[in-house]
Length: 636
Ligand code: ADP
Image (cartoon, rainbow, N blue to C red; front, side):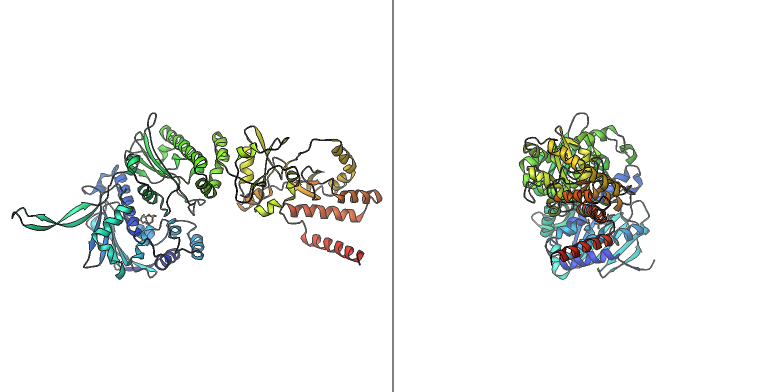
């Protein structure tokens, strides 16, 4: 085949542009990324060789080799791993395989990427980082198990295109050849390479080797020195999770995290343990400190890597953790599972269930401990991942209370950005208060001004402020905590006062007016009643206790679900002078046109207050204008 010229996908072009023009610090991480890819390629080959020994090609031992050629100005990273076919090369080294990439890149460009290189790292764009130090990159690769003539040569100078050509490659695996930029030649220096590898790749399980020239005593002539080149291993090379905790410095834990997670930032927490008994396994898990940009996308890879007796079986095993802990990264190495375990076999495997249970408990314990002893760190974690963790209340009935223990809330009685817990809430409940209250909405400012809070504020009751769309569903699912019912301030009938003579009297007094409103709005609302939650505002709309909050309805509709029109209840405030006046108007003229208009206005106002649009905005506006004219005429 002759050389073919192909274009990079747009997002790769944009990414390369960012890499080359915005990133100046930590350029040496390119080596970590290439070694990490080489190690993954070996893991895959090792796994496949379990069922297909042919792909070994009689190659003795897995390794990653670094070659520095000072004359040619090239640094080469070679592996004898799985290699790539032509289609795989075009796919892997021409596109970025994450949905949401375009949006993310656009967001990145508006931020200061220069100061936050870790943002880019969330992509797992490892290979492309080569272009920070090389002006040309050549990849020569051949898939393990195919004939040597089926090699592929890929090359690019990062000008928006790359070339592909068939070549002969004797050994399986991949060579990445970096033609270093003039001012990046230091990466050809042995000590520089050693340094970078020790810093970033020491944990890599496979040997990373380099030919080193040494002076040696000659075997032939005593006393004479000769120069010899010998292969030397540059990394420690033992699986980190099998090592003794006390022997592992923090930076090694952190570098390994970056290898498994493709994240550039250090993790928030390391969980390293060995389980013995009904199930034997080693786990090295991490709680990240920043949210992966694609955690809500379908192609987000869930679960730690699964190893069986030190052989990687899959890089993400979702059966190992519950979905709502999908931010947890790392490695689980089991001694009990068979090496030929398949995805299907993992579905209802008892060992896997035990591991899952065990890991979940460890993560919960770690989070609880963080919350107790490292509150600031926990708060940062919660702001990033609280929303994901909360999903567990919906999906994991058995751990509802344990998850609720971990939740943090803003509240009406605390300054913005100060958080409380359900336990603290209960401890602070006022005399006579029986339930836990929360209010949902889209911003704190809006919620704090909500008329739905009037009676709560009046009595000094704390109300939890919840601003995420899922919150109403989560809190309805939680239902109660430590024997206390959890109620929404915007749903159901709220009775903060005991029924007394005054309220009975009001009921009687407004019963006819209420009937009239009910009649007129019978197509719009389910019921009209006196409110226990209003103090100053005239009226509001509420859903049944079992009904959906307006933002949940909106969310479901956005997700394309058909949500049946659910009628709300109109609550009116008996202590508002408006109703006194309307009562009088009614006594004077039962068929009053003004009264009919007021009722329409009332309903539309209530719609506005819950964040919805008035039924007929034009009619609403002209009704208000009419009132304004009347009022203006009266006062002139
Ligand atoms: P990531 O490693 O996060 O997927 P990269 O850009 O580093 O992102 O690599 C893209 C893909 O290219 C890898 O997923 C892998 O399929 C392929 N690849 C890269 N390097 C190698 C290699 N040395 N051997 C085999 N495949 C490789």
